Length: 188
Ligand code: DGI
Ligand code: FE
Ligand code: FE
Ligand code: FE
Image 1: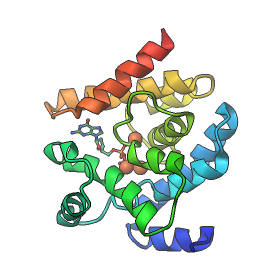
Image 2 (image 1 turned 30 degrees about the vertical axis):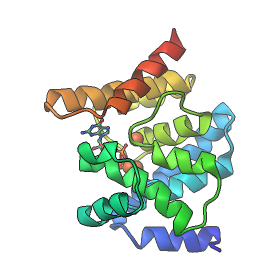
Image 3 (image 1 turned 180 degrees about the horizontal axis):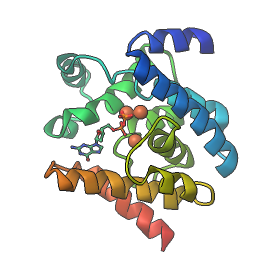
């Protein structure tokens, strides 16, 4: 199967250099957050390597894979930006031989989140928000919150995404809202 190095070669060749730099940032950050909050750093890094594997696939190819392999039908009714996460998990399993369900779920839910996010889901999703290359309003606040609370930091990340979507009058995938509400509940 794929060694870590071969996997890195295979994944990095499917995206522009800038996106691979982002992925490297997510890998480093996910390992740090795993150490800080008690997740498995090997699983966190593996999910990080693969999380955006399908990000630059042509949208027709993403659509075709979703239909052919009967991936989330609901997701097809929402923004194309969301599709790479679901397809990424499928590709991780089918193409790269990842069998760990926790790793596959962390990839699958890295964009939307979900209700009852696992520790690994949270670590990968938060790493995606706050890796060193990210530069959006509020990212430093998220990094500071992440020094003490995984849930506080991730909730701030979801608030930022949802606020951004609202300000542009975009359609919000319901699971994104459910994930955000569930995190707020966990903080009460
Ligand atoms: O792939 P990345 O850029 O590293 O980050 P991501 O996978 O977390 O997010 C990809 C895009 O999806 C980002 O531009 C925000 C957008 N997004 C996240 N949740 C939703 C969403 N877009 C819509 N329309 N609805 C959502 O609920
Ligand atoms: Fe992504
Ligand atoms: Fe994300
Ligand atoms: Fe990403």
